[in-house]
Length: 212
Image (cartoon, rainbow, N blue to C red; front, side, top):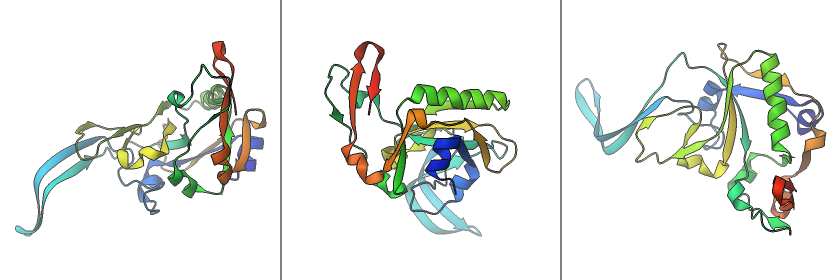
């Protein structure tokens, strides 16, 4: 178990595996059986057979493909969308966080300088000679989309999570941990119930600096 105090004071970054997220059973909060799949194909008139005999039919369904050699670890964060903030206003602006997000725990760690945080993560990974990618997650319509997937694609069932994430290459299918140092200068711990009081204020419009 990783505490928020440990994350803040030591910069302890804990990254679970893609297979871990596929196997978690928690009513589709963290768990996603299709996490990190490589392709989705839409199928019409789907028939399930046993010994050549049809036992079930469906008008439509999906087939997901995966590469068994495509291993890796994920570090996931909730991202506040820039379009929610009016950069022309100098007064505090309330940001609405999706209600389902509160099911993830009783406390949160707010990163109020994401640029510095990401730089520290990237520097640490470079020192460890770890290949990685960082990107917001794209959410697709699972009933209509057909095409390639990656660790940065998820079904629109999870769209409320507004996720941004690191994918870190790892040939060993086990959790990966590293430390980026004290981040108390760029973070703030609070109760998850305090998120309803969260406001953002633009301090310097020309630099897009934000104050929470």
